Length: 347
Ligand SMILES: *Cc1c(COP(=O)(O)O)cnc(C)c1O
Image 1 (tube, rainbow, N blue to C red):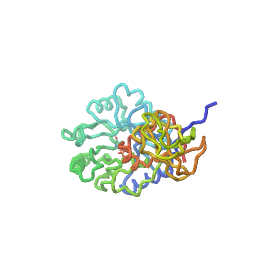
Image 2 (image 1 turned 90 degrees about the vertical axis):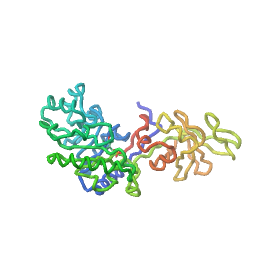
Image 3 (image 1 turned 60 degrees about the vertical axis):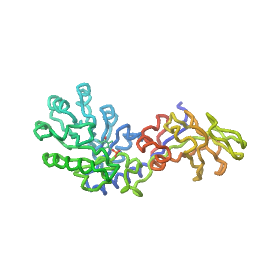
Image 4 (image 1 turned 30 degrees about the horizontal axis):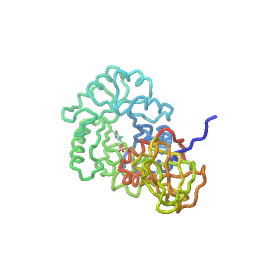
C-alpha cells in the first residue's frame, strides 16, 4: 500500500483554461501552449488534455522524451519539439506523433533526408542568438523539399515592453514570414502576446501566463492563479519568548508563540529564500514563515491564526507575481522548481 502524500499541489485546470482563453482573445489568432518541463511542473498530459477541450491544437515541448510522454494525448493535438531533432533522436522522432522545430542547417538536412516528408516547423533567430537559423542569411530556398507548418522566432526582451529589440525582431521576422506565404508564423510567448496584436502574426505560444504567471502589465488582473502548494502540519509547539526556531537560530520569538511545523522544504522547491519571508494560510489568515527553511520542513507562526491541528492541510502563499517579488526568483523558477514529492490534485 502506498502511504499518503504529506504534500500536494492543487492545480486549478479551470483557471488554466480561463488563462488560455484570455491569450487567445488578446492575440486574436490560433493559440498553442508551451508545456515543456512537464507543463512547467503541473503535468503536461493533464494540461494538454484540458486545453484541447478549449480548442488548443498545438503544444510545445523541449525534447523527444517530453514528446513521448504526451503520446496518449488527443490525436489531433500537434506536439512540436522546440529543440528540433538530431541523429540520435531520429528513431524516436519517426515513431512518435510529433514534429520538430528545426533550428539549424544540419537539422534541416537531416529531416529532408530522413523525415519521410513529415511536416516540421522552423525556428529563425532574429536577434536572441539562442536557437534557430540566423535571420541574416535566410532565404526561402533553404526550406525546399520540406513541409513547413509554422515558422517561428522568439523575442529576447518581451517582458520589457519598451525595449527597442522587440520591434527590431518583429520587423526582421515579418520580412521572413512574408517570404514564406505557405507557412503560418509565430513570434509571441506570453509576454509577446502582451505587446499587442502586431506581435501575434498567425499563431502564438504562451506558457507562463497559462500557469498563473503575469507576463506583462497588459495581463495584470486577467490571469488567475493555477497552482496551490499545500503541506500537512506535522507538529505544533509552544515556543516561549526568547527561544529561537530552526537552523542558525535566525528567528527569535518576541512573545510566547504557537508554531506549526509543516511537511515541506527546499527539496520541494520551497527554497531558502522564503526563510522569514514567505507565508502560509490557515483558514484564510496569513501565518508567516519563521526561521530558515529546512530540506523537508518549514515552521510557521500560528499565534494569530485559527490553530491548525497536526495532520491538517495548510496552503503556502504562492501567487506567482507576489512570490517572485518576495523571493527574488522568477515566476518560471517558482513553478519549475516544485519538486517531485507533491501529489498533484487537479480541480
Ligand atoms: C518556453 C517558450 C515559450 C513560452 O514562453 P513563456 O514565457 O512561458 O510564455 C514560447 N516559445 C518558446 C520558443 C519557448 O521556448
